[in-house]
Image 1 (cartoon, rainbow, N blue to C red):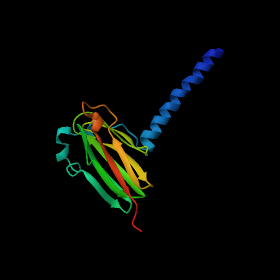
Image 2: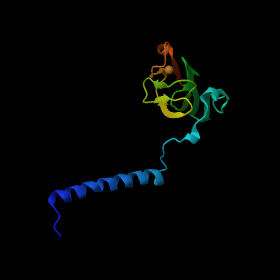
Image 3: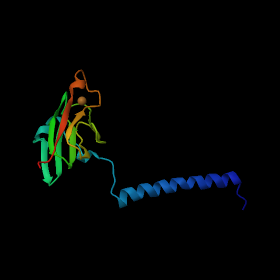
Length: 158
Ligand SMILES: [Cu+2]
């Protein structure tokens, strides 16, 4: 059977779809990567009744490792000050009570979108003492520009 040259090229290109299917299958079944589903959703109006967001703040989970539960709302963050010693690895779990907000921490690559009813998670390590501004980077209303806070990284005692 004679197959045209261009037809052979198209048949070969269609194998890309097989490669994509393999990549998706490996990420879903071997690495367990999936999109957030509705089962993780909660009512954003009741976020302050939902543990652990009923006690937003900073917790030391092991030496040098901190977890932060944070809620963004018009126009502030709770908590708006995070205090950790230098060298700390900080994981932030954040959500929004009302509209879409953002969370970016200056000097790190932590950059999250805070969506009502969903939890966003990101981690940053602070190896230099100082104050790191964090702010909302999604326009969220008339006082968006005041929605900010800071991470205070304290030099460890000598
Ligand atoms: Cu905001």
